[in-house]
Length: 114
Length: 109
View 1 (cartoon, chains in turn red, orange):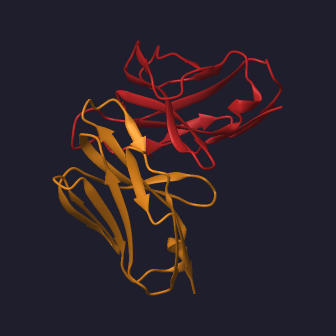
View 2 (view 1 turned 135 degrees about the horizontal axis):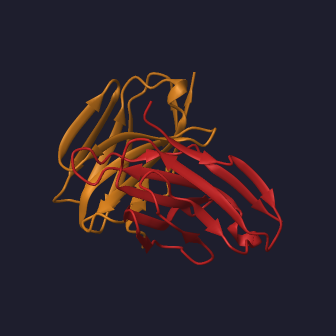
C-alpha cells in the first residue's frame, strides 16, 4: 500500500529537549515536505526537499532542521523545542513529474512542548 | 492578503443539498489541489488539476486559469461529507505548496 508514515503520532515534551519526528514514504517520490497546522493560520510549509541531499526552507523554517540522506526518509529535527512549536505536523510526498504529482500526506504528529 | 483565499469559511447544509466551495489565488501555479481533512486530522488529496474539470463520484472540481479561480462542488451532500476542505496551489516553480485556510463543512441529516 502506498503510504507516508510518521512517528511518533503524539508527543509531549519539555522546552529544550531535542526531538526528531520521522517521516518515510514507499512510493519512490522525489519531493518531500513538512508542514505545520495551527488554528487560524492553516497549513504552512516548514521545509521541503526536491531529492536526496537537496533541501530548502519553506515559509516557517525557524527552529527546525531537516535532512534527506535517503530518498524514502525525511526527518524533522527540533534541536531546542519551544512552546510556540506546539502544533500538528504533517509530512507529505509527491513525484516531481506530472501527472503523477498528487500530494500524499502522513497521518500527522501532534506535538506539545511544555 | 493571502495568496490563496477560500470562501466560505464555514458552511452548514442539509443532507441532499448541492454545495460549492470557492478558491481564488493570486500567484502563478502549475497545479491546484483540493484536500479533505476529517475531524481525526488526516488529510486526503481529492483532486489535483491544472485545467478544466475533474469528477470523482459526487465531487466535481473545476478551475479557470485565466480568472485564477477554482470551485469544488459536492452533489447530493451527506453527513459523512462533513470535514474541512482545503484548497492549495503548487506555485510555478514547483517547489512550494501554499494553502488556503480551509472551509469547515457540516452536513446535517
